[in-house]
Length: 286
Length: 330
Image (cartoon, each protein chain N blue to C red):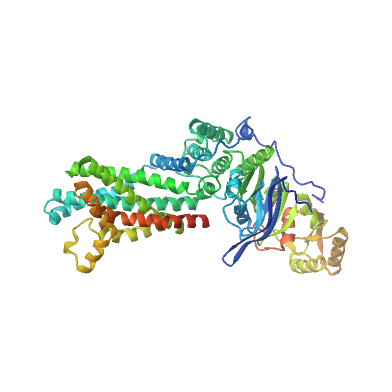
């Protein structure tokens, strides 16, 4: 007859030292919410998070720029002479293209980050906060823009050291970087969709590069498509990545036409208009 | 019928959620008064997490209605979000950031600015005994520290209702005690707490009311004492001299008392719910008349374990602890 009259076990309120000493969580009672922040403010907080990530995980910057740096050096010095007569001439052709490739490749990382956040349950916390529901994505975009600027800046810096000269000067370069950000913004949606649909960050990366390798290599980034077989050239000519590289070359050499710029912007605009609503729908559905 | 629900933190009627062919929650009613610790108890896959996610506006219900702090989860999700906080089963934190940065980020999302956000983060860190680890990346935190930070992250603004999904799963006993103590302190400060657990002991220790959930349905609700009382006056424990006779004795007891017979982890003792002392007496007499040699017997109040098994009709004699549920420690 051990426990027939035992009451339900009483909470042992004094069996341990209060967490945090004498004050404990009592000090935290009844904090009312401050005035609700606006959507922009929410988005900037997520942008701030992206910057903190650079500080705490500096190696991600290494991931971002190592491939394009290697590509730049390899193509310029190994293939440059054969492809364009001299490494210097080749660099003049190649650098705007590698900037496009850098931005396009980098957009994979935001999809991976998103997938990680979902896996860790971080988005569950964000979604139970009374904030603008698209703020986390806007924040991802802010982080992406920073990544594109940093990586693009480093590649351009290396190009300048190696002898690359943008004929359109500072204004052309600034316009070219504005174009790069637009490209990155558009491409970002593709990988945000992947991040929402695919379960693991590794799969996002594998899928991402499966898409990106063919479209960046079968383009005019590395070589003039004049020597390619017809069937391939007809693809390369309409490949959005080629159109982007052409426009960027034009902007940096001061020869860009409105048509070139317009063609380069088609893909980013279409991707944004098509995928932003899809992202919202997928996010609300999860 | 009492339709005044203003004293309720949570008021749910007929909540349903399906995932494909599987019905995770099959029509649950729930009334949680303000200021109470309320436990939703059930095995893995019972629908506890889905129920919680619906109430926290993370998953839309396929049927039914619910209000949280007076706001409809479907019609006014932003108002619900402004009055709740949720700590999920897995620490929902940015592992690359420091504990302090995580709290500053969330404080800013709530609308604290600059110095106010930092002050709020520091106050939370101090209260949760995490000041020393404030500038460490969360990936270097122990399980208990993570859970504390996760709960701290739910208290940036004092919520009306705090949802805790299995708050102590995976924690060692000392970290578990720490979290229990935090939960009690929070309840004392007036926060309504709805927690899910698969540990009977946890529900028994913490909760004023317990809803038992199995296969997406609520099969019982009440205080721990009520649940125990509802399953009869007590449990008859019988051990036999000859272990070889256990199977026969179990069959006989099950037939006489119409209840599932539990076998102790060592297999030496049979436990069965008896409606009344007279029923237990009659069953014992039948056992002796059938030639079984009883070494020892006693009557005890049912533990929540036994209540749970009586309610769900589940038994798992092969498992060493005879359940996925933790045995009451004392």
